[in-house]
Length: 200
Image 1 (cartoon, rainbow, N blue to C red):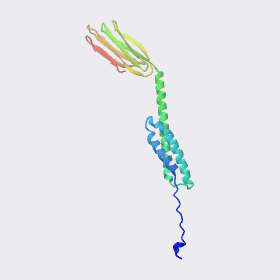
Image 2 (tube, rainbow, N blue to C red):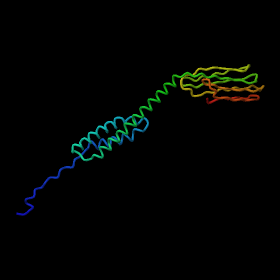
Image 3 (cartoon, rainbow, N blue to C red):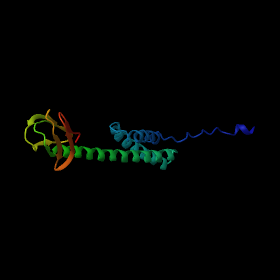
Image 4 (cartoon, rainbow, N blue to C red):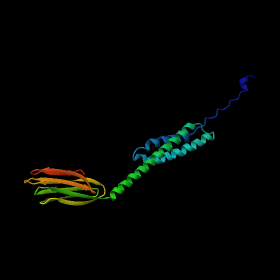
């Protein structure tokens, strides 16, 4: 009897697999890549959380000897945690921005328009832009100095004050103050001259 007749075929054991750990790694990687993108990063929350859970389960399978891809499971955990941290930072930043916008919307601003000089007749125009309305008005002044106070609510996006002399000429000066701080001044002299204070 030959030797090969006594040998029995021993079936090869299937290599342990860890689909959960691999899936956790893939989800953690995608979540980390997506998490820093503004607005799109919102979808990173479920990806990194599910990726973290799957990676932890995969690591548990490795420890029980039912899987071999320990490195991939650990990488999935690290990527998922990093993605989760980035997502949390985004929530904090967005929350702070929303809070700041609400605070600015509640603010009240006092704008003081002033025109001075020695011109005898001055045409005055002023415009205020805030987040609620645009205030525009115009009037003629025969005596200087001239002052107008305007209340603006919320985010102040600018405005303009112009003061123009007539054909008789003279000197005219414009000044704009916002909440007690002078933001713009300008002076013009001569016939039909115009002082412009804009962009405050």
